[in-house]
Length: 132
Image (cartoon, rainbow, N blue to C red; front, side):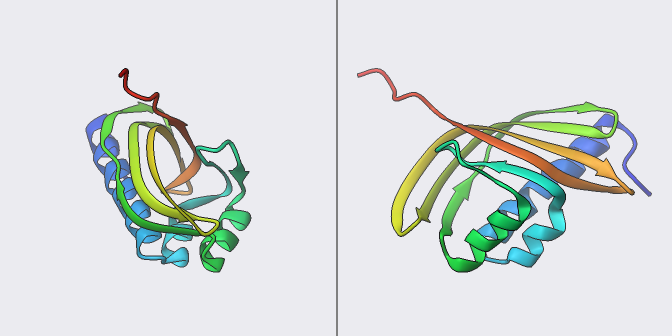
C-alpha cells in the first residue's frame, strides 16, 4: 500500500534519501539507479548537470567517489505526487581525481510514478563562507 498521508510520504522520502546517499557512498550504481527517474537532472555544486546516464558513467568510472556524506533534512514539502526535500549536503568526495570537501544547501525533487517514488532532480548550492 502506498503512503497516503503527508507524514507517511515524508517518512518514505526521507528513507529513500538515506538509501540513495548510501548507494553512492557504497559505489553501488545499480542501487542508486533503482531510486532514479529515467529523466533525472542531477546538478553538481560546480553547476554541471548530468543526466541519469552521464551520472551513472561518472560513478562507474570513478570520476565521482563519495567517501562520506551527511545530509540533514530541514523539511520535506509534499504536493500531490511530488515531494521536495530541502536541507544540506556535506561531503568528502573525490571528483575527477581531486579530493574535495563540500558544504551545500540542497534540494531534491521526488515524484511518485507508477506507485514508486523516484528522484527526478537534485540541485546543491555552495554555502557561503562564514564571516571572518
